[in-house]
Image (cartoon, rainbow, N blue to C red; front, side, top):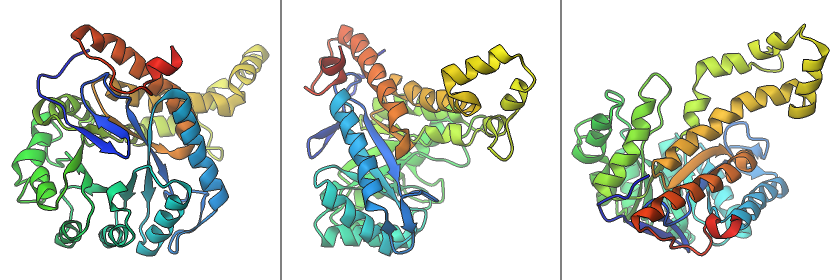
Length: 345
């Protein structure tokens, strides 16, 4: 473990602190909701949702956050401006404190989201996701004219996934489709609470650089840093083939076929049958990829579907406790009374 020489910035989102030296604050988790084909969404254009189910999912996140001390943001995903309005209204009705990420691959929807949260007084809780090489002039203008002051700033360089390449995107500009650097764009758009995203890339395509960039971001910029490292698991082609689907069983399931009865009984008893075996094979790296990032100093872990909260929460609490126990040898002290070290030890 380590302590960064550079002073570390900490952002305050209504009492949820993000940033600082490793060990000072609990890692913040980001849960995705309303993603593509999410069962909670009944109409993804108008933003009609099963409110009871959505609230139950979010309440479970809050319950586990209270239990472990690991705080949460929520990441709302939409390709529709109308749906964004519905989602923000719903979330404010069930939680009037927690920060939320506005995430979309459709620029006009994100531009409208900036305008809407400003109109209804939610901008201080909103985090724009993300400022990257494909941000449009219209979205820059929408951000600049809004009251949104926080954004994910993405260190993605499609031409160079190395740490040097990622830093060029953040600091130098002239790459990734933009003349200016991502941090310069963020500053010009009025972003005073940036969160650096090290841009998780698939295995074999610079995934190691996404982890090393955590150290670079903290050491060079001193800003809160993190990413959606579960994307590495999602994009792992071999694992998807190996896991398979119910319609197309994996090589793992085929390997169990014809084995002795004792082995079959064991898999059923310990792992809930073959589905449990396959799920364990998938969830292990899905959790592990985030623990690696946390050990390297990541402040924000966007772990994907909100349903995965049960799996990630204890793993994250465990990692935060270990990081603190190592960091205190450097004179680092916990700055949060809710840290899992106090709750779970």
